[in-house]
Length: 355
Ligand SMILES: *Cc1c(COP(=O)(O)O)cnc(C)c1O
Image (cartoon, rainbow, N blue to C red; front, side, top):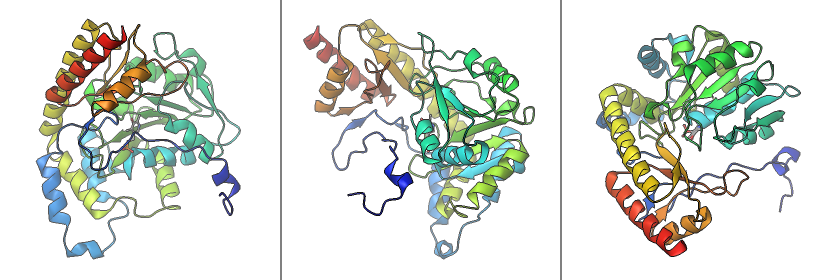
């Protein structure tokens, strides 16, 4: 089967994304997509860009998009990098900032792409155990030189990291690049983007996939000191000159032109999150204080796997991992109020069978 595969390809254990059903009408609460459509200005911009100019390559430097992002975050264009989803931006960070033989540190429970990138690029890493309440212990992260990757809010726990703790990581490991993955920051955590310019070792990554409802467009970006952005450009230009196509650059620009739409949809999601958390707590679930567009929940008497399967049978997808420490938890993305009502009714029914 693996004849002709390189040694590296044979050794890989790829990331497994959540199910993307084809055809079936399901309530999809398994991959943290937005339940709302993208900003109207984003869709208009994509339609307007779908013309004869598609015969031409896109701007390899994403100049207009980087200028708009720079303006939105109070930075310079040279402090902004754009990529094909933040997964790509993160992959480029692993290549640009980390070296074999120096351990990269990340949490034992966090975004499971980090160990996959480390393995792909032959990098050493150590997974730091979280505290019992899933908060991040700072001490084990300090003093290293290999690099640090943290998600804020963390995935799949949803717990935010206070800005002071990010500062402590940056100051406690001045020899290491600290990557803060802010995929969910718009749903309630404080961004470290305001620290860019103060710390030469900080990289903040964000995505248009979650809060901006553009998972299908594949746009992510990094905010960092010019020197670090130059390293990302250098690696990118050694791999793919044009990671962001014309439609993606246009759509992302359109989305940025309508910031009030982001605020409104993020507010709707956080209100629905609050409502859903309360109802699940009433049913006996332990529900963490999520600052993201999902809830991480466990029930003392009902198996997470049984709930996963029972919900799947009722046409509702949620996420579960067969991994130490979190196998009794489900991660439930926040949908519309109506979808969450359907979820809560199904969960209630399943719990009454189980206990
Ligand atoms: C979804 C997600 C990403 C990647 O998003 P893209 O769609 O590739 O931009 C990165 N980090 C975390 C923690 C995520 O959940």
